[in-house]
Image (cartoon, rainbow, N blue to C red; front, side, top):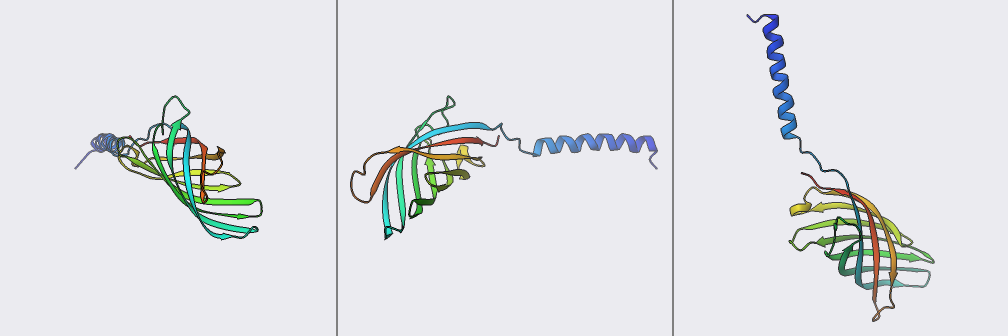
Length: 167
């Protein structure tokens, strides 16, 4: 039969083993990092309704990104953005999903929600180095040119916020 002292000693050893196992098994996340990039794209629109009081369409945009931060996150990534939008009078809203592909072939998928040319983004999924990534931030249209042909639009947007990658 164990004495009280032996039970206390065993408890201490098993407690240390438990803490060690938890520390080893719990994945530690890296610290949040800033994200700040400009996305340049050309878009095509498929209009479903062109009424002056109510318009809605689907769109597909392709382009490239440039980082505005010294960490160069999201620098020189190819982007494919697909979504839907509507305009009622002067009020516009849109929703889209964008795939950002880096030079290694890894990619991250982000969700965008926008009202009046400003909105939010959130990381939904990633592969390779982006697997398990989390992050969110703000999205704003910065500028654009005259459409190069009917049914298209060219412009650029800025995305800022924070993200983190698992270790």
